Length: 293
Ligand SMILES: [Mg+2]
Image (cartoon, rainbow, N blue to C red; front, side, top):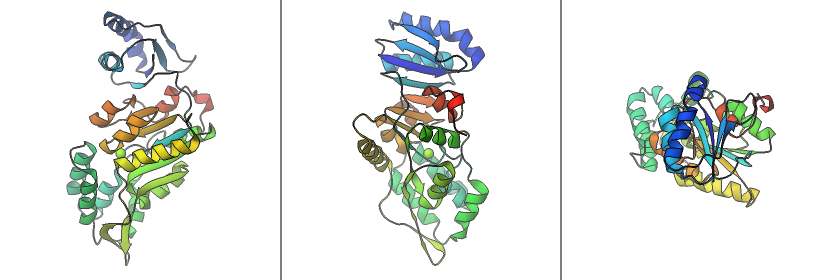
């Protein structure tokens, strides 16, 4: 059983939904239902009792891209746990790239970040390489960077506040740094943060990190630990955009790739390619009248 929830451009949706259903049926996929999720909501729900996910994904992309989608083997519920990446997911920036600009190293460091997020480089060594390049940068650059460069992703605060209001635990887990993630978590309302920490001595970055590296395995372990603390019934939502989010996204009940790199999108059972983060609320079936802004 697959339940597909879909948001696409309205004109596009009405023009193509019949063609998409015909396409599914031509491939032997039975469509047991296709209806708007609630009156007034922009979400279409397809009920596919015996479909395979790969065939469905291909049809959705062919007819509706760009779309926002959640695919589940049950009617989705409001999750008990929300765990999210930070950079380019909950905020619009990559913190280390913006911080590098204060050291006049943005092009060099951003090039490494991009390759790491595409999954072309080992995350830990790519992180250490970039942090080392920042050696000697004044600690005050972090405060300036936060004030001048870092901004929440559209819909981030509403997503976090609304899920919390519905009893969901919220955790920010990032390969970035506590020096950024802690203030971002405070701003957006996350209850817990897992991150790396830049080492500072005598008011300047040393080029090193304090403690173990938070990487893709840490993100996955955090998801597993947090879900276990809730109980075996826990449904989890994970959002992220980069290669280091893949194990976490793949393990979550609802793994949503947010305007993501292709490898992360391929590992997810949901994606937001067109909307902002409030699309996730729509896909979970939480109507806008129940959102907390
Ligand atoms: Mg990211």
